[in-house]
Length: 421
Image (cartoon, rainbow, N blue to C red; front, top):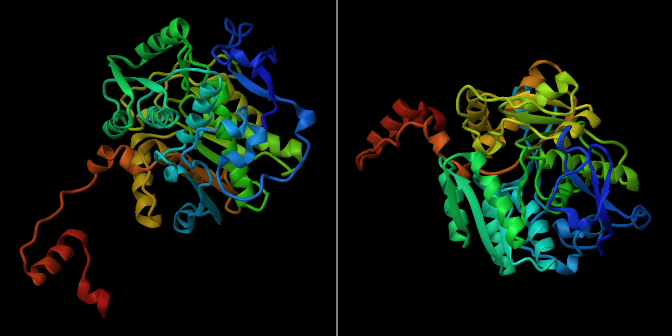
């Protein structure tokens, strides 16, 4: 069962009832807008065995804000921790894994958020799920709303990646596009205020994070990583970061395990970002983060936020973490390298994790014998257009095998005769 008792501000510690999931902290609003996080009855969370059998995030139900009996599930969680030996060698590292979230029901880690969010919505009698999304979050919300039998409305913006928007609509969501990304939140907030729509995504301006009940789904990433590593933890976890929802939640997951005696420590966290707001916040020491506008459009649109959140900054500070800015060229290069070397094709935003890690390895911040996990948040088919710009057209050959061999050699540098010798 769930032992959630309330919500606590991540900055000042003010306690709110669970019903306050649709707001930010009133105390911090004028200083450094801050998110609320779920609080649990610590006395009830005494160390105990995991739920026996099966896979997936609902095995960790006592540490979630929704009773497992109220779960809206598509079989989420339980994704593998995949070793990346060839990429590790390129980086001069001995130990590197990817937490492969491309295998979630809708193809991204957002399923963990949507699963808990929609379960909480249905439990509370909500009839409409709403999300502001350029891609993965909207697709996940649409899928779980359909599973729950609830209506789903998605506000997206012009230029959002095509495949996830198609996925949202195929799953029954009512998708509306606005001209500017920032125009989405007032529309979403109006629906929450006037009709009680349940949002799984950010709903305040400035953004403080997504629905705090839904965010608890991301904690299970930490539990599964530790479980796969025989209840040890890596030295580093590297995540692509937009508003830092998963970054903050995964730190809470590792903190949970230390408190319960499952593990001994919390890994250092790395925020792979494209604008640099979190990096600037760490450098300044302030709680209010700067708005850092990009000079040119990013190919990693799903992590393109110009301002980070306090909860993400706090997670970095508390874990002695760092923020690294990844450029378009770096992202594309490491996206291609991971695909060629390891057979794992990620969307650009997900590949930002590897681009950030490469910089830290080169600067010797990450040491050769450190154990590193990157979060592979979504697959390349979510946004294939970026990779297509780097790939030459497929050559056409006649029905002549020798001509095909010649084309293989000239186009791809593959000499069949030499390879078979």
